[in-house]
Structure formats: C-alpha cells, structure tokens
Length: 151
Image 1 (cartoon, rainbow, N blue to C red):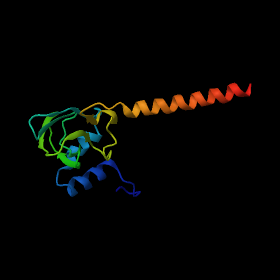
Image 2 (image 1 turned 45 degrees about the vertical axis):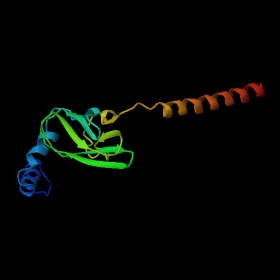
Image 3 (image 1 turned 60 degrees about the vertical axis):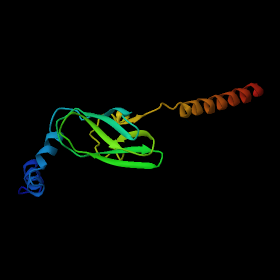
Image 4 (image 1 turned 30 degrees about the vertical axis):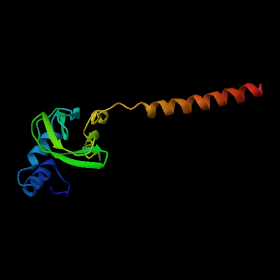
C-alpha cells in the first residue's frame, strides 16, 4: 500500500509472491503478457478396450491446473491436467463407454479466448439442431397460416 492506501501493482505482486511461495510468477506470466490464452481438446479416442486418450493443447507455457471432465455412460469422471507443455496426451482408464470430454467445465479461466473448442464429442449428434429446426418451421408455418387467414 502507498501513502493513500491504494493498492499498487508492486504491493500486490509482493504480497502474493510471499503468500504463494513463488508460485505467483506463473500467474503473472499469464495475466501480464501479450499472448492470448486458449485451451482446447484436439481429440478423444479409444486406444484399447477400456483405455482412452485425450489430446489437449494450450498456447502458453504455464503450468496452471486445468480440470477435465470426461462424460461416460456411468456419469462424469474428473481429471486434473497440470503440465507446462503446450501439447499433452492424457491416457485414462474407464470401464464405461466415453461420450465426451470437456476442459475447464466451470469456466474458471475467463481469459480463455474461445470456449467453443474446450469440448470434444466422440460421435457427432445432430438431433439437437434437427429438433430446433423442426420447431422453428412449425412456428413459421403457423404464423403464415394465421396471417393468410386474416387477409
């Protein structure tokens, strides 16, 4: 704090570097650089009967822990990815069939520029889009029938 009781960047950095036992430098590397943070899942594939591989990428070299949720037929399995490499393969074992994976499901890292590439679905599912299109056509058809009967 300075003489006016305002928090300066130096006082903020000094305070947190003492509290976090020098782990604060990785956070400052993320927030005070010119790079844009983007985490993504590139692939999710089955290697053997109950072994799966998730290929994850990030565009900054910082070892921040990221939560990965794997959606299976028995529920959700949570994994933690804590690695400083930009590209990693995470291999896990699941007896249940895996449907999808999602990195940072709670959206904790708001500096992630693109949330749409944070998930990966094994089989593409078109039923949701098809259902929305059918409902839209239904309402458009009914609106045209009502307008045509008025006039």
